[in-house]
Length: 480
Ligand SMILES: [Fe+2]
Image (cartoon, rainbow, N blue to C red):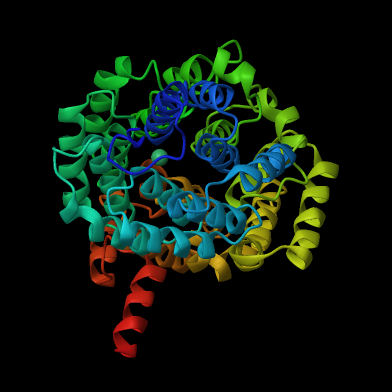
């Protein structure tokens, strides 16, 4: 009998060809954020119920949704996997071990297991996708880049999935501040596959960080016809487009896209998952950005009010809770907002691993600041958010997503007339990797403009590297 493998030659533990074909299709779809991933994995399970991998990938997919509502489903999938896993397949064993860590909040331990797996199997594209997600949601951009760069010499266009690998490599480089490399790899990914959603996404991030707003808008508009097969990532790309439109003052277009592309309540994707974390984050984030630019969005906030009210005890991702708080506070659901604060404090007592740390180090304070900002307690915003601002990467997410918290800080500092704080925060923003601050509306206005670039330049801070990552590198150099 011929040994079944994935598209890159790694052994699969099923002799059922229908199951193997469906599993391979499901894994590739998951890696490339396509909407048919789950259906393919379900077909694989139906064809061979003793095949552990499709159940494992399905459990990882549900874990990646960062929603406690699916915790029981993940648990029953894990029970199933433990009953049928082929213990001689060490890739499956490692996927399971990493998942066991990740689902209880120990994402760093999960990443460590996956890192070792990738050292043995550098072309394991599924492993690359999983470790990237875990490190992304734990704010470890340099580590994310290190792992994929270590594997890169083993990849070429002769390896199946090269475009997806390049796109993942590009995104890791972008978050680590290596914009030229990120753009080059992402363009290569798109050249091979113009539907590469992670390739398009990475370029959008590079354009945003470098302040190339017109170029970014054109880039995404031109590629947007290629995303029909994508999952919620396509909503996120429309959110990215809106960030460019915001800098161009095209607010009406943003409000139109809000309910047609970012989160269309009538779309099958939104109907199937009305509380998808990424969708709620996109909507909350763009509404608050609009509001901070003086746009009246009071009628738009309620569209996700109910969905966020249902997540008060969902502590799978601190960045998600901070966005939930934006919505609860903006829609006047103050009891739920206080419940969210209390529930996070309780989670911080009983939680585990890096997820617990993220709430303790930054999540609770960030949510308190979001609530204080809505209550116009600008001193409270500064007192809670400013001390933890260097730890914001621990919330997870991207520099682009976390920028909203600096926008809140700057707004509060400006309203308090604290010009020195405005400049301090602008230096931070520059150091994180945002260029051309004078062309970013909110920051330009806050700085009172004329001497902004000169002041920032005089600060002489390194640009393009996150503070925490830079410190980490310094520490490891000292250790050698
Ligand atoms: Fe993004």
